[in-house]
Length: 115
Image 1 (cartoon, rainbow, N blue to C red):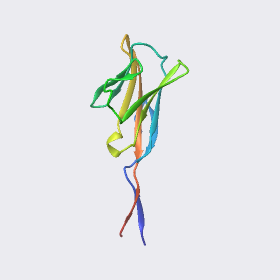
Image 2: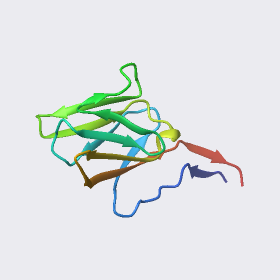
Image 3: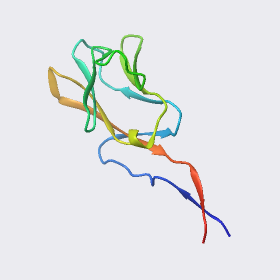
Image 4: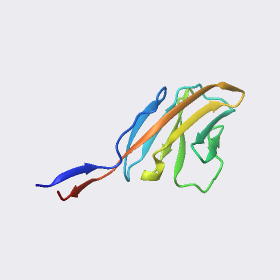
């Protein structure tokens, strides 16, 4: 008999939104704050990666910012890996009291395991 194991095990972050990503596919995280010149995106353990709708690293192929009709902004994470399984925040640097945090849970591949 062959059992299947899903890696990693999904966990929830209390008080946060959760988005499920699939290995090798893009993930989309929407910021629920209005678009502004001082809206920033931060990645857990990496710091600020984008501000005012633009990535700080112009050569980045990992992330992209997409504005939706001027009201909302999304962070796109290309080619999701297990290393992307972390928290992402958007907030207005003029008002740090409103921080929107989203946890990306990355689905691993099904691996056969022997009994």
